[in-house]
Amino acid sequence: MEMLNSIKKTVGGEGKPTQVATEKKMEATMEAKPVANKIKLGHVHLSGCTGCLVSTADNNLGFIKILDNYADLVYSLTLADVRHVPEMDVALVEGSVCIQDHESVEEIRETREKAKIVVALGSCACYGNITRFSRGGQHNQPQHESFLPIGDLIDVDVYIPGCPPSPELIRNVAVMAYLLLEGDEDQKALAGKYLKPLMDLAKRGTSACFCDLMTEVINQGLCMGCGTCAAACPVRAITHEFGKPQGERDLCIKCGSCYGACPRSFFNFEVIDEFEDISEIIAEALK
Ligand code: SF4
Ligand code: SF4
Image 1: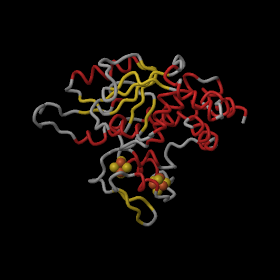
Image 2: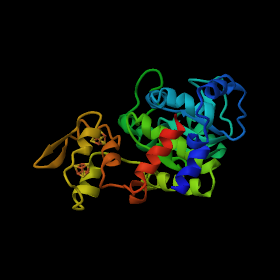
Image 3: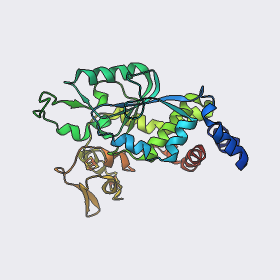
Image 4: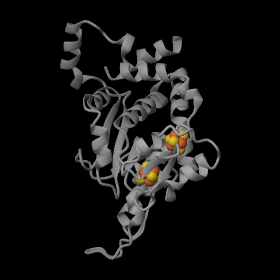
């Protein structure tokens, strides 16, 4: 609880004025608020559909709150007029990399050089997703045929899988990245615990499909038939037969959402045990 209180002080909560008049004054001076302790956040758009950025914005006022209090958006070709990749604390990279497109290859390499933490945002960046099916031959760049997840070209620190990734997970990673970089030792430890499973996912590899459930969950005797994988699949490629998942592999777009959502895949009990505290911290941060 002591740690929770200290975290609340950093992200808001107990340290925040509660009087309405004071809040109004804070709002009025928001623009003038020093930003020295904000982290530098960037959105790098490669071969993606911008749906991951839309999902980020789907945090609604939570997204604005993050930009007001915790992060400056220093790069986003969709949202800001900054033309070249700057130094960043956290780069949210959306989309895979077309290796016949020189500029995309250069941009992902430059991102790795300039960002402290590289996050693969969404399944195209993590696993290739729908771009795995690219075969080239289309007007007006028929030679653009090979698309790779960013982890095949650079080291990636954190995965946020999903097509689209959930707004809540993006929000949580942003708040935890802030605590990791700007928090005290306890906060850094908590953020490290929270991010570890998503970092482990990044180390695990760059390919995904329904088969992951077969080889790493069902075949290992770990499946409990909960149905979370079917609920997570964006294309309804999973049904349940006799209490076990059944995949329609011609429908599967190789997004990795099912394995990412399965409670028997990569979950970390250190995080689950602190679920209530973590939820409270994030809620306080976004009040
Ligand atoms: S989410 Fe995992 S444990 Fe649950 S039914 Fe699917 S494979 Fe089994
Ligand atoms: S089965 Fe569905 S959730 Fe799993 S990888 Fe394929 S498309 Fe994604």
